[in-house]
Length: 126
Image (cartoon, rainbow, N blue to C red):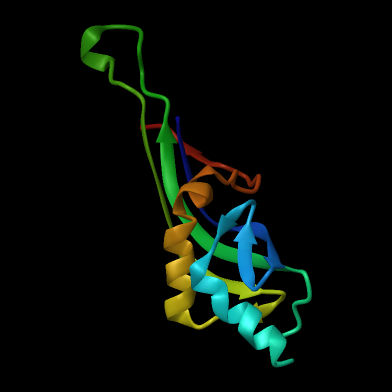
């Protein structure tokens, strides 16, 4: 049986603003330096921390394969999981598309590790 999905999910990241630098778990995030600068001007409310939320779409399938029976009916497991950006926000404020894509690319490995929400799988037999 093949499991197919087409869903949305998100990755939330707690950011820390300290000494004029935006950090994620001890790693400086230069793409978000403007966040600190706007907070100094009072144009963006971020005192010590902020929440970055990256929403994305996922579409894919999993086929467990067939590893028993006659050789002509056997094939290895396979699957695919494509994920792409929907939007990115900081403290609920939507970010411009170019910056959103830059952050999606920066966090792509973490995004690929996000467990997708439970949904009714679409099973069918070939």
